[in-house]
Amino acid sequence: MRPRKPPGLFRRIGAAVLLVWTLGFLWFALALPRPAGPQKTDGVIALTGAGGRIPRAIEVLRAGQARKLLVAGVASEVRPGEFAAEYQVSPQLLACCVTLGFESIDTRSNALEASRWIAAEHLTSVRLVTTDWHMRRAVFDLSLAVPKGVKILPDAIPSRPSLKTLFIEYNKLLARIAAWLAGW
Image 1 (tube, one colour):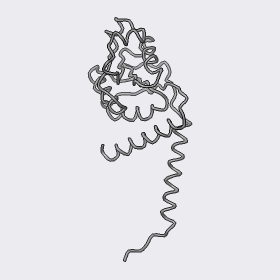
Image 2: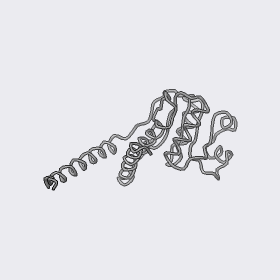
Image 3: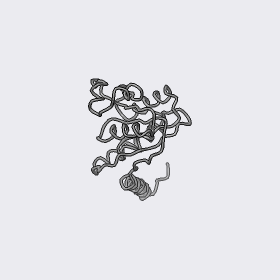
Image 4: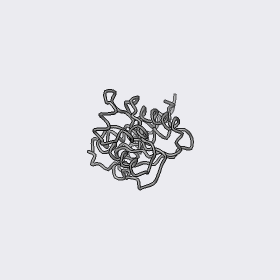
């Protein structure tokens, strides 16, 4: 017969897990990533989704803070001319410096698409533009996907996320880390 564990042990473990989760959530929600400064990188990556991401990336490109732009996760029905008109991008800038990525549908596939683009363009540093609440998971996935030695500069778009958005995104980040630890 096996010795029984003290009945309070499971409660203590559960309480400790809940405390760690709560403290992590507070850090996640109260210390959202910030916009980057004027640092230069070889490229800039904008993840489609919430507003402000693509205009910020184009602003970075026009300011000479990056020489190439990947817009990852563009809907398949979007045509380059429509994109150029929507974001007031000249045909010359579009042709030389902007890549529309149609392969990705989520954060993980954004990272894989971006990694292939980084390798094809021989970039050693990239600025990642996404919303502040999404940045940590985006950086995590991108850092796993990019070639060794590529520097990632997070450039967060400030927002006013709801508690629900923060709760969901925090748990997505934890699930993604768990999946990575499990080898997925």
